[in-house]
Length: 311
Image 1 (cartoon, one colour):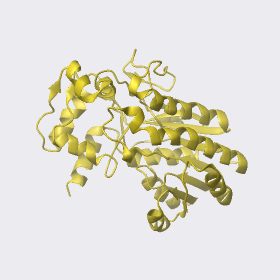
Image 2 (tube, one colour; image 1 turned 30 degrees about the vertical axis):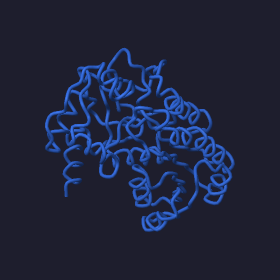
Image 3 (cartoon, rainbow, N blue to C red; image 1 turned 90 degrees about the horizontal axis):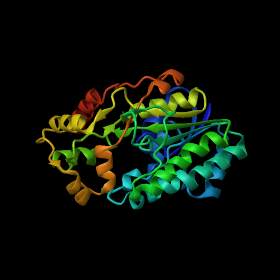
């Protein structure tokens, strides 16, 4: 198939492009940086330099490629800071999830591309009820005030992609980890800059970046339209995974802070994720995308990630 991959040099795209090429697909891959063109060409893709917010540029690039499938992996997550002011930190990514999504959907309509696969996130579930959510569970009706715009952008993509094309799929990824994806995260744990707030009762779902890419490829190649949680098999509370990661990196156990102090030092969003976040089930993706993660548990994935980073 002819596949148009945006955000092709990001955390997921860097694995997705070689996977698609290796499976015989004809891949056109975009980047905003001319300096990354040679790497995309070496991976077997036809590179295109385009800004996802440039509507005319996006439509022209898609028109030239004439893809059967468009993959939306555009984010600016590498530009984020400490997440105290989430809407500010996510502003560029939110624009790509709204205006950038609209540009790709307009391009898909123009060339008749029936299938669009887009990168979402599973941070949008309601922080009530069961601790592990399925795709049918309600979304958070009251996001943290500092994250209202960022959550609205995720929800916008989540809704508009399946509505706008015959085969629209949104992958609600868990928290990324893996080489190059979250090295600063490890460094923060090593320096004891990531404490357990309150009881650490928030449940997180993780996904290694290679596994995220393999799910995206599965969605390119088949599966019914809709939304899918793309996470590993083991949602876990902060009080469990954070000390485990600290031990792996050779750090002292994470500090513990009461909620009031965490709110003062880190902000409401971090406190909420540490104490109220919900995990997600991957049962639908396993069944309907015929996808199986290489790292079904973050325990094994973390170990491999940390060891590779220390070499």
